[in-house]
Length: 128
Image (spheres, rainbow, N blue to C red):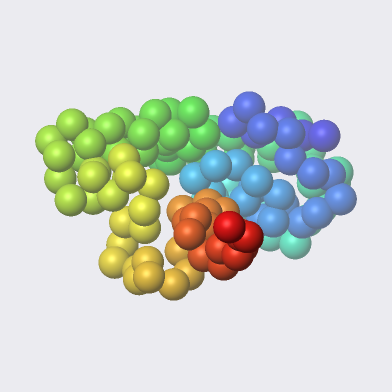
């Protein structure tokens, strides 16, 4: 397995697909990186030479923020929003959707499992 930016990328996939396993690199960015490193997009990772892998790593290090550093930046931005009590920060704190989605229905991914509120069961009649 080739290792790029601290991530083991799969050997059997094409290079551009494998690069998307690195946090912060999507399909278009991967193709741009390969173009700048002069590596064919459809080459399999197992067929790459050490020189090509090092070229790809150099391009990523020179121009892109990926993995741990990017995650630190993103979490810092969210923390800043929470600290200044911005609307988006309050939504992050409350584990609710941040970008204007409805919450009366749906939003289960963000809110978690449905919690049923008590008081819906009929009361059993008792003999007196």
